[in-house]
Length: 416
Image 1 (cartoon, rainbow, N blue to C red):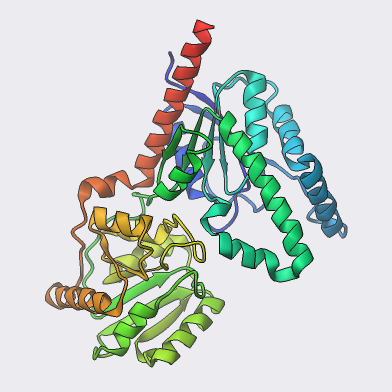
Image 2: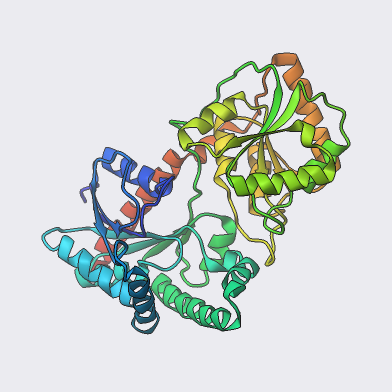
């Protein structure tokens, strides 16, 4: 069998600012490995990233019209009743690819779209399909309920019906796929009940951007980049309690927050409550290209989570952890999820997933002493584990899975 595949990739929309790094790096890897890649996705943001493969965008909703909201409402009703969006997307994909031949359909989604279209097209072409789920509703049931209930009981009831229907549709498509991939051990365990051929492929870090670099700094800085969420989604109290009980000089010790305005407001409320404002410095949310330099200058990388559960979330493998692992900076995860993330932090020796202030104090003290001695910190991560958690390695895992699925499919086909 020729190991060069012709791959049809179906996806939800590429959206700013990240533009789906899991998918983008996979496509880059597949093209570099000699495979032919055609991507069809829903249209949303302008595509500002370079790519050496075809991307076809399908506009499913009227966005530049005074009837946009009415169009959205009507089509979403049709979507609930008739699965309209999947059917419309399938029709567009078939028209775009009518003169092309493929060996496999790969579909990636954060919820359910476009799983049905992917499987239907695969069946019509008599080729296998692989589904990648990056998020699932079950990972945060209570949080989903709060979000859905904000408009009142009738909206809450309607959305519960929509989610229930969507899950039935999703699970049906999972059973039809030749293989399923997902992002954490918790996700894998749950999805295996619908498809035993469910594989774990972490998100990882981009090794082209995130690599170790020792930079002497005149201040010990704990750095946080990204959004901050209120409890119960994130619980920073072990850190704040530890800082309230510390006697560091603000001249040589601080916490830098690269966050949006709402996140800054949340952090300011916390720090005022614990009387640790003197340590805090706030910066605007920064572009992804700037994050490696921020982490290189940092002494500790902060990851905010909370104990995993139905009131918080399950299987949340935040990108911040992988990026810190890539630059080999100590990870301070508070409060520990006591689940998938804590396990990987332990397995990679990336830092600590702390459950209380004493653990935080001891960890910071150790890293502060290291900074005093060298002018920088460098976490002694397990290199084999670190290398296996790069996005480049994850892309290789995807490629090997796609090749295996096609090989198995062709072998069964030849026996029929």
